[in-house]
Length: 254
Image 1 (cartoon, rainbow, N blue to C red):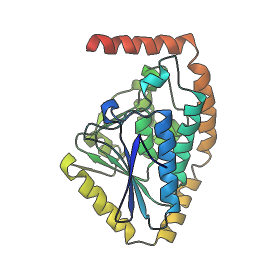
Image 2 (image 1 turned 30 degrees about the horizontal axis):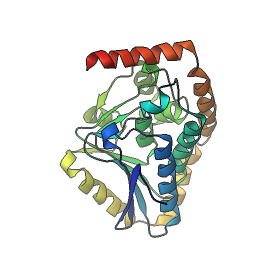
Image 3 (image 1 turned 120 degrees about the vertical axis):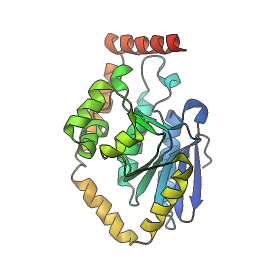
Image 4 (image 1 turned 90 degrees about the horizontal axis):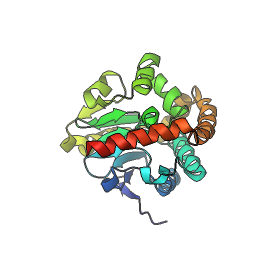
């Protein structure tokens, strides 16, 4: 399968999946999520692949969530929701470690993708945050429940209830990422971590990942319920008003 929205590269037994829409700050479309799932499946089935890396093209953004063009009529499609959930479960279910190389903005749905990775290494210039309540949307599945496991209940509620933006240093302090390095050193640092992982038993790491996931796998129920709920919410007058207000603020800021 050829890809248009991602790059898929094998480098020394590491699969690099790169969101390749830099002009859109690597925002994902339905097609992007389809390709992400296919890339993850390719990595799963390739026995030579030991680690998977998710990254954004360029140095501005890792991923800023869903492309606004797909939600301009009010919300995202049922198909988008399907592939959105599928991407989350593929990252968690992959039998190999997944490392997020956060090279810039990780916002909204993009932020959730990095949270779901097993390890996150961030550039000093990276920025993190959730946007849903600002734009008439939300993720009450892994995006909320699993985030609370990562940073704690109080911080997770702050992240969602205030929709602030956090620096890489702040992300490290709240244990949202594992390490922060200069942007020029990001790929080298990620490669170093992958090299250390490759020295270990793949069978052992596979079962350790399943063990880590076991305690939170019930959150998939929240995920599927959330996707259904948010689809209904997008059609409400409240969601439409909030989305329009956000777009007007963006227009005035230009």
